[in-house]
Length: 100
View 1 (cartoon, rainbow, N blue to C red):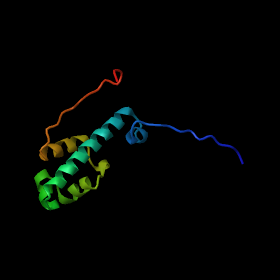
View 2 (spheres, rainbow, N blue to C red; view 1 turned 180 degrees about the vertical axis):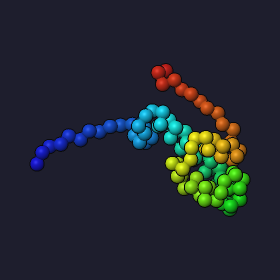
View 3 (tube, one colour; view 1 turned 60 degrees about the horizontal axis):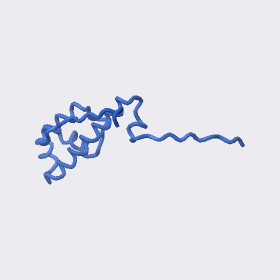
View 4 (spheres, one colour; view 1 turned 90 degrees about the horizontal axis):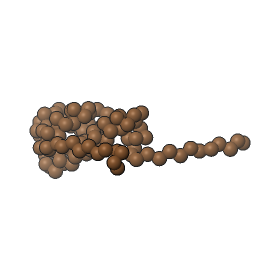
């Protein structure tokens, strides 16, 4: 039996581990943050899914995907539009990695 070395890699986030590029990880992180905020907003309305979907300009199955956290089904652009319909005012904050 041979000894095999186990290589352990650490990442700042799960998206850094999943993505092939830093840009892809940043996109996934932004989408996840938006999706979570929208989901919490929708839940706070305490409306049936049909009414919540209509309020967001979505179909009920599309809202269901959002509520189930199916991140791969939503582009950043789509989530920005949904967040706006949910009543959010979006801001983009950029941090210089070299300064951090």
